[in-house]
Length: 244
Image 1 (tube, rainbow, N blue to C red):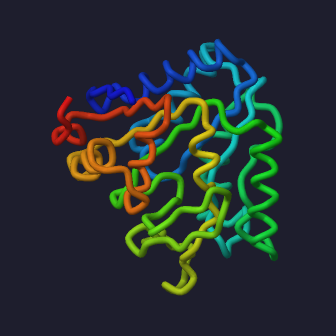
Image 2 (image 1 turned 30 degrees about the horizontal axis):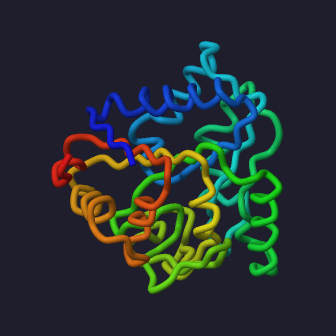
C-alpha cells in the first residue's frame, strides 16, 4: 500500500496522471468508477474531461464499470448513480465508446441482477484500475461495515448516515433509497490496481483506523491492506493521524 500526501488542489492532477499511465500501458483497460462527493469536490472528473479535450487522455478502448447503484429508483432518476455518471463524466467524453456497466437498482429480481452483474465482471476479467472513495464509517463502494461481507455482488442496507439526503427529488424520507446493489470482496480483491482518495480532517480518524488498524469487516476499507496494489491519495488533514 502506497501513500501520497498532497494539497487538495493537487489531487485531481495526480489521479489523472495515474489514469494516464494506466491507459498508456493498457488502452483497453476496464476502469472502475466511483460516485460520492470526491470526484466532483476535488475536480477529478473535470480534470479527465479537460485532458481528453487536450488530447492527453483517450478512452476509445476503455470500458467503464460502476460498482454500485441505489435500489428502488430507475436508472434515469435524477439521484441514480447512472445519472450521476452521465451528467458529471460520460456525456462529456468524446472518445468514450459503448455503454458503461452499472447495476440496475430497479430490477424486478435483485438476486438475479446481482448474478448478472457478477457475470459481467467475470466476462471483463474484472477491473484493471479502480477509483475509490472512503466513507466516514470505512465503507468502500457501498460495502458497509458488517460482521461478514459477501464475496459476490449483493444487496446491502445503507447506513443511515450514508443515505442520500437533502434532495428535492425525494418528496418524503421514505422515498430515499435505503438499500444498494454493490460489488463484493471478489471484485475488490481482483481489481488489479486501486486508487483511493480521502481528503479533509474529518477523514483523519477513519484513514488511520482503516490503513493502520486491524483488518476487519467492521471497517471494510481495512481489507485493502491485503490487496497487492493500492495507492492512497490524501491531503494533510486526512493524513494527520497516520504514522508515515
